[in-house]
Image (cartoon, rainbow, N blue to C red; front, side):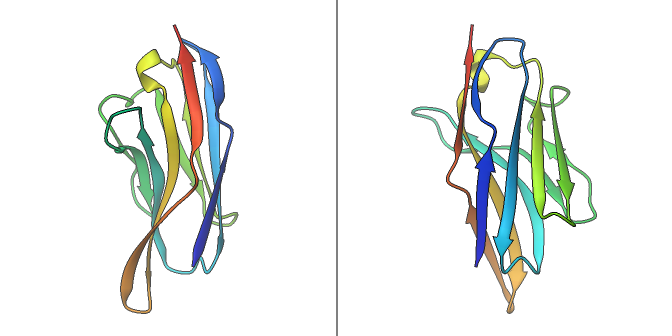
Length: 119
């Protein structure tokens, strides 16, 4: 079982920046991908960015060039640096991990952290 805990959300004005972090704990062996999804009110959860172990980052078109994802495998953390935030970035941001262990793929989610961007 992998446990994900996010931190760093909050309220910011348009054009501002926030840094959201996620730490994985528990049975972390075999985590292949870590990333961030978000869900705005009355909308489906969508990918923001993800980074596979030893691979290249992937970003949603809406955030490319403004957000940067980074991962520290030694500390089991993934960080999303958000810059030039827009009101449409307002959402609950969820940390995500995909793990291959015991012959099975499993998905894990954090509890979410609110990011609110005021215009």
